[in-house]
Image 1 (spheres, one colour):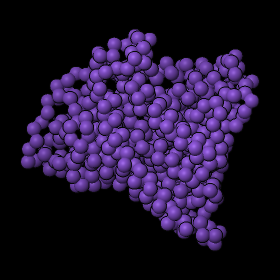
Image 2 (cartoon, rainbow, N blue to C red; image 1 turned 90 degrees about the horizontal axis):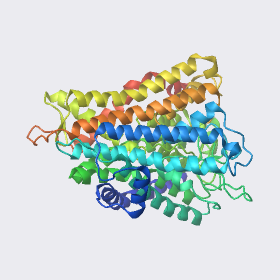
Image 3 (cartoon, rainbow, N blue to C red; image 1 turned 90 degrees about the vertical axis):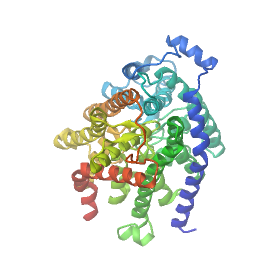
Image 4 (cartoon, rainbow, N blue to C red; image 1 turned 60 degrees about the vertical axis):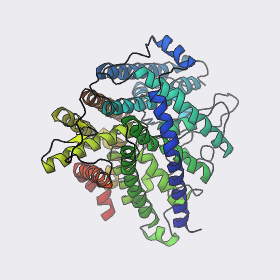
Length: 553
């Protein structure tokens, strides 16, 4: 079968599977986050935490809960790495050096899962299981909780509360992430992925992480399935390794798990605001952007620019022969449009346009469909900015879902949008301006700039993938990338929760003849256009000096 046709069938079956899951999974998540009953296991957890599950929280209390949980998680994970030589089943591993321990702790707690080391030679079993694997679940559950808080802000009227963070955290972990991960693990084992002590490959895939995980059975050093990281993973081949991703079928399943929750969350949003059409509009925005990215990436890679690639028909450098160019391009698109960061091919080997498209995917804020939870609240922020722009065009106070978008709301939305550009551009500039930062670059010229730009884009957007041509395991990059991950995660979360609190306090505005319909194709096109234009205007100079300049050489 021609590669192009095979790629089309691969993508078509993936789109069909996601469409079939949209309603049932979205409705299930709606019931999870709106149900009043607590399971016996959940009640035990609440007692251990000292939480009153039926007490709701204002946005400030909710935000303090998120920050407190995250800070304690960073400290715990940092300490675990620093004392791992004293832990049971440490496998003789030395303590992780401070800068790397800081980077790794922040990385997993922020759901970035960036790794600048080889898992099998750095981490023992306790750190992997009690530290990294746990964060693959709860960091994703934090993102889902924040998304639900923002949705409640739109749905509620004259309310001071947004729900209970601890309830949202526990329910997201126990009722959504764990069950789907368990089923996915069984399917991956059936597909030939290695399984011994425990399977966390699916955990990382599903929750937007890409953690390495050594098998805890001392007699066996084979890796269990995982969505590697930053060119790392238990094997440096990452998800191209046959132990982690053995067949084209498991490659398809991995991509499906990367995006299924994020693509179904707009259905949950539509149910919670009482208008399923709003959910269809948001998922349509995600789908349009994702399809554009898929098309550009696959076209640029299949067109195989260059003498040798043209002679053989396709550019296979850095690709796994079992998957081919198109399926690798689809995987790369999915991983950079979400907060996953796993790779089954080396993005450093992509064409200038293909690699540039992967960077652009992350610069969009990973909203198509984005991270688990973070994708939904990111696209809703862009929807707020869109209705504000539309209101300015017609001279009317903008409204979205019956809530006025006034000065406070647009300031919060604007600050949210500006956080990532500030971190990406400042971080890239500092790295390129210092000898220590430039020393990590493998290639000279525009491609070298692309490597650094990609690294700071990945960290600031909590993605976790890398170009693979940059050596960032240095105190400078471990520290600066860790700061980008921390600020890129928690500043937007605080701004989202502040916006949710402001919206929840409002009384609904009656729909009138002048109200902008936000469920029609016109609005979908407006959100897509505003998103692409804002990102292009913000990052065009950096892209012009990197991938675009390389494409002209």
